[in-house]
Image 1 (cartoon, rainbow, N blue to C red):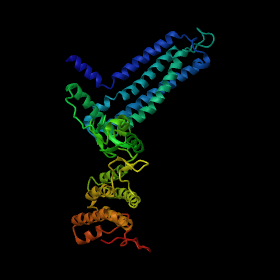
Image 2: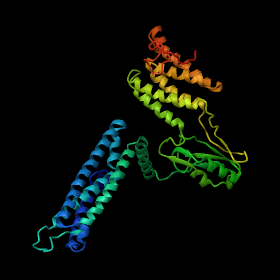
Image 3: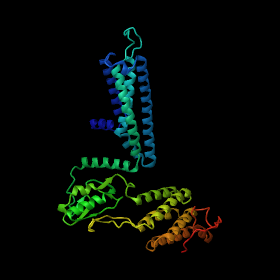
Image 4: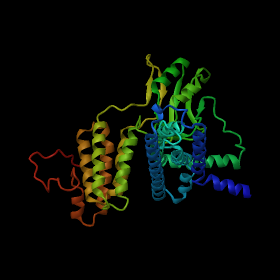
Length: 432
């Protein structure tokens, strides 16, 4: 038990790897200065004693600064994670080996440069040609600095990527699965899938589908591939990913699975709905404290949602059915249609911000404008949203006058409606 406690303490400590790097820096300095008495590396490379001292001094100073910078970034990351996610996530961040390695590399380089300075002699008593320069130590210090610069750029990317919600959630999930395999090593009997189903080799979010590649594979095997998950869906490990209509024996299963890119989080590669979702999240967050918390920011998000839907409303959307050159159906993919885009854009904002006249006015202006240009087959979803908005906003209003004011179509929320600003050319509005 004592061995476990010591191992656990060392595993969860931030200082162990940096301390080992400092010891390595000391050993490296002693080794390089011990085998080079000043004649191993030419002066044209290492410089004279004054230049060598200046180089080592600047390296030591820079590494001390970088070590402080990395520690500051780590503290900021801990504070952000505690405030945004959970205080219990701190242990995961402190156990981050890349952070420990970056701190250790900077600290070890600092130690090496600092100790190498003691071997530089500027007097000519022992060396009439101009003092002693441990050229190998200087060259090693320069190489370490180059590595530190590359590590700094890499670490900045690493620490910012690590603060993503998907990264932290995945971090905890991966550690949990590792512990699960240790505590319960028997994985039991795997779920049996039908022969026409292909399982997902790993979990993740589908963020890109190689449609052309899948059509080609299906055509070559003379079958039809049916993807069971849409772009943006999370697929668990071992779940059925694809159904094969036809003879699955002739299909290259590995190539099919590789044609579906799975990652830790949704992206905008092929997922228009995710971009809409992000704007909705921004609007909801500003309204999380109530409909009057920050309605102006919510209106700005609605502006962009309005613009996106206006560019979608008259476009022919894909059915999710892909054919080969001969017209044979080869691939079926779940695809979001117009009604889904409308619901994603308006449902939650309407519920969260209907109590704010600024939000309800802007929502009505967006819906009325979209109705004015929408094809007949796409008006139903917009009319339904408009009816829900009038019902919810009207129910929140305290008086009839407030209810009427909250349902004035206003592109800026408050300030540019017809009752406030005289317009020489009034905007077209759909009456309901």
